[in-house]
Structure formats: C-alpha cells, structure tokens
Length: 299
Length: 299
Image 1 (cartoon, rainbow over the protein chains, first blue to last red):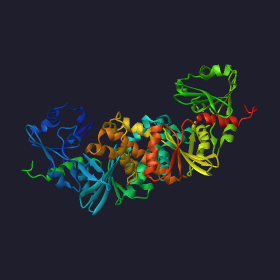
Image 2: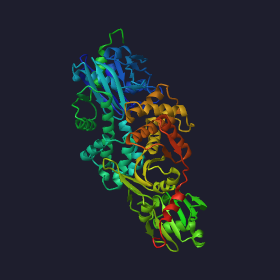
Image 3: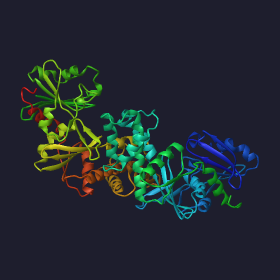
Image 4: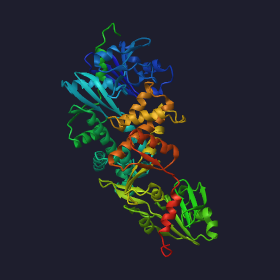
C-alpha cells in the first residue's frame, strides 16, 4: 500500500510492504496550504501517481489533509482508540484509479469536560506503540508547536493533553517587549535554559515569570544571546510541571525533532523523571499498522 | 509647580497648587517615542513653556521619560519607598528657565531573588495612598499592559509584582492559531469571560488551557464573538490566582482604565476577594505629594 502523511506545510509519501517496511519514500513541500480548492486529486497523483500506475491500489492518508481545510473532513474519533478502532473510522475519499482512505484525528475530554483534539499524531503514536513496549500504562510526549502528552493504556490511546508551548514561545519572542531583550539568532544556551526552568518551579505563575525575562535583561542579568533559551526553559518548565501534576506513568517516551526532544529530556531530568527517546519517524509504520487492520472489503 | 506624567505614547501635564489641586491640565500625543534625540527640552517647552513664562519654575517629571529611552535615565530606587524616599531620589535635568527633576522608578526583588521594576506607577501609587486609607497593610492592583500588584506597608511601597497579562493577550490574539478562532471586533461577553476564568482555576496549567480555546472553537463550543473575552478571562484568572497564592491583604484596591478594572473586579469577586475601585487619575496628586517633599534648596 501507499501511506501519505499530509500536513499543513509538507507531504511525506511511503511505499509500504505488508510488514510495514518502507520500500520507497518521498517528501515534497506540498502541504495542504499549497493545494487550491478541488486540487487534492491532482496533488496526490503528482506525488504518487507512478506508484499507483505500478499497481499500488490502496492509499492511506493521515494528517491535516483530513481537516476542515483539507480534502475531506474526517470526523474526530473518540478515545480510547487503538489501531483497529482508528482503521474502522477511516473514511473513503473519491479518487479515480485507487482506493483512498483518510485516517481520522482523535478527540477526548479533559477531566473538566473541555474537549481535546489531535490530527496526524494518532498515526505516529500507533507507529510508536511497539517501541514503547508492553507496559499496561505509558506516557508519550510529542514536542512540537502544539506539544501532546498522551496516555497509553493497553495498547490504545486512552487520552491526551495538548500544550501550546511552541507557538507561545514564537509569539512572545517576536511580538512582545521580550523581543527587545533577546537575540533570536544566538545558539541555544543550556545554562540559561536551566535557569528559566528553575524559575518555572518557583511561585508567581507564568504571566509574572514572563515579565521577569524583561526585568533581568534590563538589569544586565540576562544577556540578549541567552534570552530565548531562558524563555524556552521557562515555558517548557511550566508545561512539564503542569503535565506531571496532571499525572504521568514514567518513564516518559519522547519522540520529535532531535533538538526539541533534547530540551524536554533535559527538563524531565531536572524534575527527576526518567525518560526514553524514540525515533520520531513513526508515521510510516503507523500508516502500515492502521492499513493492516483493514480487510480487503473494508477498503 | 508643574507636574508631567510623560509616558511612552502620551504626555499629561498639570499646573498644580501647593495642596495638590489641579489648576490646569493638558494632554498631548507627545510620548517619548515621538521625541527625537536631544529633543526633550524643546518638547517640554512646547508642552508647558507658557506656564513657565508665567512664573512656574519647578517641573517634576515621572514615567518613561526617566528610562534609558527617555531624556535622562533616573536609576531605580529600591523598596521600601514612600513619597519622601522617592523625592530624595529624584534627579536634576539640565534645562534653561526652570528647575526640572525626574522621579525614579522603583525596584524590588521577588522572594526568589529575581528583580522587579516599575516606572511611572510609583507616582500614581503615592497619589492613591490617601484614598487607600490608614490600614497598616494594603494591596493595590494596577491593571494594564503590564499589570502591577503592589504591597503597601505603613504608607510606603513594600514590594510589587508585575504580570505581562495584557501584552500576552494581545500577542496571542493576533499572532497564534487563536487569531482564527476569535472576532476581535466583537463587544465584551461577560459569560465567556466567566467561563475562561473558571477554566483558569482547573488543573492543567495555562499553556494547556490556551490550546483549549482553539479546541472549543473548533468543536463549536466557543463562538468567534466570545473568543477574546474567554481568553481574557483565562489569562486574568491565571494572574489573579497566582497573585492570591503569592499573598495579598484584602480588600484589593483597583485603579486603571474603567473597562479593564471592571474585569479584574469581576475576577476578584469570583475568587471571593473583596475589592475597592479608585479614581485612576492619581498621577497629578502623586507628583504634587512627591514635589511637596522637596524643600526649596532640594530643587
């Protein structure tokens, strides 16, 4: 089969063996934002038309391509959900020459009844389950623009909580008075990250701690080249503290961009929480596993 | 004497009687950002030159005019500080035809040793002390872009904590995915503000609660015209919760823009904390009181 992880800004396509082995892979700057209305069939053909012509007649898509801004909206599936439930909730997309299905995103409710959603990560999570192992409970953390903390129970996604940390860092660094206090071209500074993280564990709350970034810069206690690392440590520190307070089952399994995962690993270490780092490239295996749950008539 | 509250974006000038009565007042869009290098003497003359010519020979300036970006930098004075200490730390500014002095900002350290600063608010606080009354301890909250929570002890500023709430609201509303979920032209919505505030009192932390603004909008639970009020309630709720945890001496004395003070009053009410609302136009009286502490030879 063919698996496609089709996000907002890029598209990754995999030609997959039945056991999940990746036979061929491609990547294109062809995210859904670049596809004009009605242009999805042509964009898919452009990406993997030759594989289809060569006999692959099953295509499974995941990611923002299934969102309201994508090809067809695939409604969110409620947790708990594993590969079989996700496969059962895929939806058919009309396409000439192959059977194309869309993986749904997942939804859950936090304890106070507020809804949570993810789209795209569910497939990576399914791909990571094997590496996580057989523990009845596990916690997975997927750092990114909107970091997800995921509770795994008996091989299924039991629930999850997204944190807006990455995007808040970007907005504050560029669009508040803090922009003046930091050289965002500077390389990461581990000591400043640690100081920000330590600050997050003190009283006062994030909105107060943020103002301290400016004050310390003003007082010469935080050089511009350390500003962004300090702010990053402050925000990730607040996120990790909140996630731990909400409850986790250690070790925490981390998967994502190497540099970002290293920061979360550092933060978890400071909190004394064991963690393991996994290969972030899990979408291909996830697509294969979900696709493998679909019988021939299901397609 | 003449008092001038000279901030980043505007200038307010007062012709003051010895008892603090305002004889005349003026306001101009002539904040320090509009003054070219070396242009401060001319800008002051433009604003109040006729009052000086009419015989006023003492001018007291407060606000960002005393910052590094202003006329001359007036170093921060350490708390505790009252009108007398602030008057004693004013600095002389060279000017032809009148004696001009600058009010310093204040600095303090939070319990963890992180520095805090304010500039301009110290003068308003001195002006508010009379209205606050004679209690040995009081808490003043000055909402704004960078809201200040101030501890008053025996008529002096004992310490304070700034919160970046207003600026964080602006940055998140305009420069994150939340921008898509809200109609920022819509009038305030009290019910949505209350819901955001209630959310702030639940577990999960601000960075997680922020993502919920998007999710609730996506799920149709938060209409665009309620988005900004919800976000405002969420942020002010987190601020008030952190400030109360840090310790306050009720009732909380509020002073600031009417609409913003009303939101803080609503939040304090939800937390069951009594409050009193004061006239925010306290800078003139503060300038008169600080100026009144200066003897003729001090000028």
